[in-house]
Length: 198
Image (cartoon, rainbow, N blue to C red; front, side, top):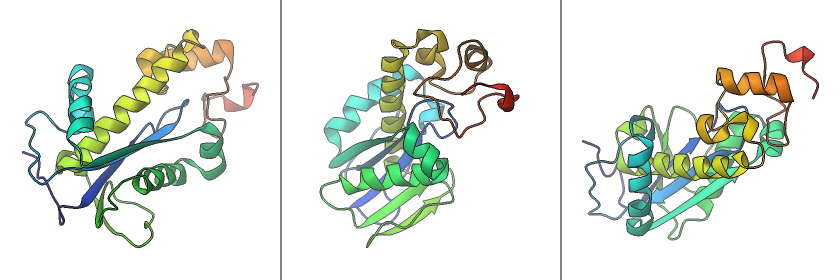
C-alpha cells in the first residue's frame, strides 16, 4: 500500500519518463495530492498496464490540488545531457504548480536542488509514495501520447509501440532510414555509431 505523504501535505511528488529513449523528449510531471486522496490501483507506472495508466490519468488530473507536465526536447537533451535535462524537466514542472509546494519528493537518488524548497530523493519512491507514483503515471501517459502523435509523421520507427526506446526494431529502422529530427544526436543510436550518417 502506497503512503500518501512523506513529510508534508503540501509536498509535490515529481518523476520523469523517457530518460533511456533514443528519440523524443524526456517528460516530467509534478503533482500535489489532496490530504484525503485514496486510490487502490495507483502504483509505479512501470508496474501498471497501459490500460490502467490511461484509467488513472483523468482521475489524477481531476483530483489533484495541482499538477503540471513538462517536455524537454531533443535539442536541449543534446545540449545539457540527459541527466541535466531530466532535472530541468522536473524543475519546470514544479515551477508551474499552484500553490507552491512546501516540500518536494523525487524518485531516485539524484536531484538538483530547487530554489527555496527542500527536497528528498527516495529510491524506488514511485512504489512507495502516492504523489511520486502519480507523477510517474502522468509523465508516462503524456509522453506516450506525444510519441504516438509523432509516430504518424515517421511510422517506420513504430514509436506508437516502442515509444522511442532502443528496441531491436527501432535500431533496425535507424539503420535503414537514418535519424529524424526527433532523435537524440548525442545518444549512441547504434553499436556502430561511427558508421551512421547523421
